[in-house]
Structure formats: C-alpha cells, structure tokens
Length: 120
Length: 120
DNA sequence: TATTCATATGAACGATTGTTCACATGAAGG
DNA sequence: CCTTCATGTGAACAATCGTTCATATGAATA
Image (cartoon, rainbow over all chains, first blue to last red; front, side, top):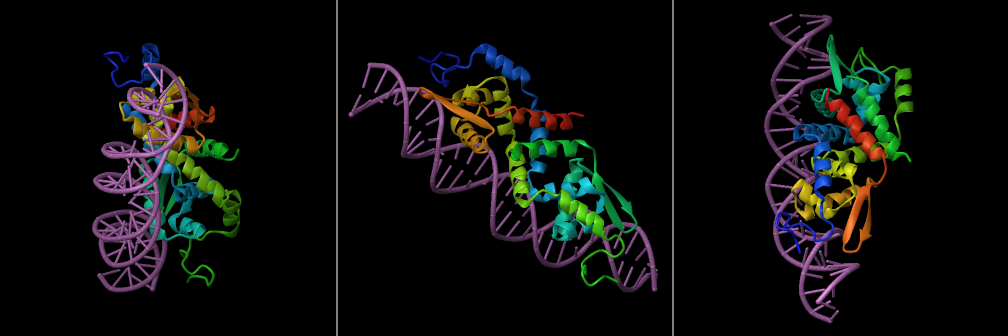
C-alpha cells in the first residue's frame, strides 16, 4: 500500500508534503546545526560547567580555579583551552599568570536557562 | 614562599577568602551540576538537535523522523529513547505507530538561546 | 643567563558515545 | 493464530572525550 516515491515509509501515517516543506524550511542549515551541537557539547561536562560558575563570580587565574575545584592545573588548563576555542572565555596575561574571564553574558544566560529546566 | 595550608597554590595571585566564599556560595550543589551537564550533553549531538527541530514543527512518528532526516529507524529510535529518558520529548501510542512530541516549551527556549550564540 | 614559577601541550589511557545489525515486542488485520 | 508492520533494544564497533603524566614555553627575578 506504499506509494512509489516513499517506498520505505510507514503505511498510513505518512509525512504530508506540506509538513515536510514546513519542517525543512524551519530546519537550520547543516553548518548551524553542527555549530549548535558543538556549543552544547562544551556545556556537557561538569568540570567545564564548574569552571564557568567560578568565572561567574570573578575573573581568575588557572591556579585559582584548580584550587577551588580541587583538580590538577593541567586538567583545568586543558578545559580552559576548550572553552577559549569556543569563545566562551577570554584570557589576558598578567605577568606570569594568565587571567581568565567570561567572554560575554550569553554564557551565563544559556547556563541559567538550562538550570531552570533541571531544577523543576 | 607558600603558606602551609595552600602549599600547591600560586604565590602572589592567591584566592582570597571572601572570593572563595562567594564562589562556593553561588556554586550549585554536586547533583544540580551533574544534572545540568547531563542535560547539555543531550543537546550536544546534531542528530538529537535535528530530531527536536522536527518536533518543533509537528508531532511525528519514528518513521516520519527517520525519513525526514534520512537515517535508519533504529538510530532514531535509540535517540528518541535518550530524549524521552531526559523528559525532553513525550510519546503516545496510536495503533501501531508511536507519536513523539516536545515535552514542554523549555526545550525550544534552550535551543533558541544556543542558536543565538552561534549565529553572531 | 640560570632558576623559578605559572601555564600550555602532546601522548596515552580508560571511559563514554552514536550507529549498525540482528532480533524482540506488540498491535492490527486477515 | 499467523502474518505484517512500526517500533524497541541488546551487543558490538569505531570514534570521541577527559584526565594524567611528562615535558615545553615563557615571564619574572636573582
């Protein structure tokens, strides 16, 4: 009972042409979808989330964060590099230390929105 | 030159007591941090993002989504199970088919917020 | 310039993840 | 009941990820 053009489609609940058109029109491009999932992937690690919560309060050096989170300097540095590559944090050098800070307020809004969802 | 209690601390840019207190006060509990990163992990996959964009337009059966995204039914079903476990989508049975829909409007808001960040 | 200290980074490891494949479940119709 | 069709699911696989360890970089100071 399947049609010729949708042979592998389920029989009676078919995707109607207008629905398909609507979905495809509202679906962002491949690049945007990739970037979007890459962005959320960054937030999908509790170490990085904790780092960002540290930076919500204050800009900090690597050592500060490592101490606060009770983790090695190397682990924090690796994650800060990830966060920097995604432009979620920015850094500036101050003598021997490097100070990290939130890149913009978007970061906080995204995390707040997520937190709102999990705490309900 | 390091103090006794913070032996592995950097020397002159130290975490001050009040900053530490402030950060720790604003840092959510371990469970909330875990849940939050788990939530973002769900969004950190372009297949799941695309499924959610499908459901933005319409509730749909598994087969519909598989057809629209040009993926196997099994792959979609696995991911829908993930989305359902996280309460991001809901399902109801209609005869032989199972219809999936967004669980609530939070989902769309979180994705919109992320999309706003990547497209700038 | 030799040393020290803060940070960065490459390699390697175990752990987790997404898809595929094969098959199970469960509802409808003959 | 037996078949068909839509969906669910366990096992297995490659691929990706986060941490650790060792070491490199680079700035300050003796």
